[in-house]
Length: 420
Image 1: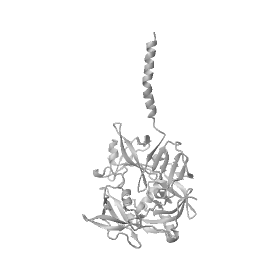
Image 2: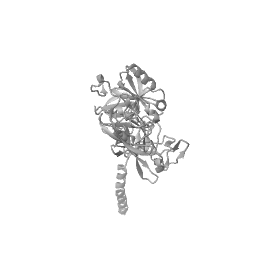
Image 3: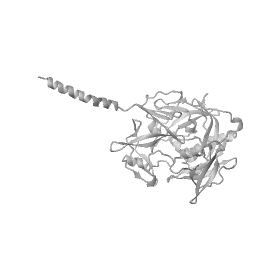
Image 4: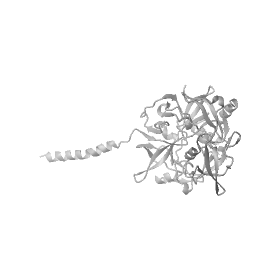
């Protein structure tokens, strides 16, 4: 009789069905959406690092369309058991096979190495001083996917090519095949240029040549010296006190028309960095501060960008206390200088080399650059109590929030960025 064998087969099939269902349920998704934390306008998300024991570790990741090289902190590399080798100025390691965003595995297999800044052991979690991110997701990774950066709703989506349903007005984008760096056909003063798209930069930039040309021909556009507010990246060293800023009256960026766009002049180091990623001369780039009202879809496979207007709010970017700061590896903030306002130092009691200890009693060491900048923001005329350290002694000064890089009176009617 064969009935017992049949029963055994039926039982076996029944017992494996739940496992097959579970395996199907665990299939990796084609697209995921995760929350964004904006830190000085930069896109920071949760990333999970796969560890050798099969578990994962959550760290912060920096989404950067303007940098082609992956980077991570020493701590992140050690967590994944990567073999770190260090030279005199920096370190490197073999890249991880993948990282995880949401429940989606994002491949890093195309890289030969991943850069790791050389830091003291006490600063092993630092990838970039003043930032919480421990790994950078660069343009060379992003170009292999569909990407949606939703600034108004603070969401980031990434998916396999063809998986995202993009909305908004379309623009051709020029994608460097080697780096994934994006440029968008643009116009200023009816002249054609290509401008990069860099959500990893908190402010927009113009090439030195174009900046000087416009500054000379349009002296009525607001100008200032000193990287305050979103222009204070903390990565330009002492030179940030000398950076030139200007508001461009009108910038056509693909199908968009931005007004009163705050830009900084490319200094040589930054110019070389971005031209390397662009693969040639670069007229400038549009950074995150100009894009806060938009959902930006990047269809790399079809070289198309989508801009979906979500808000029409005009952000008071430069209503700040005029300190120019540099975050240090020991988590302190050095004051590099103070910007002038109406021809005088905006905080005359503060000297270059002082350290900012607290704002209105809130300690700033261990904070990110974005968190400190937000403490210095406000309504023009508001006072902030700054705790300053000089030569080991602390004291308090009162500093006013000022409206830096102000428009001229005839140009102060409400404006907004959008489609013509």
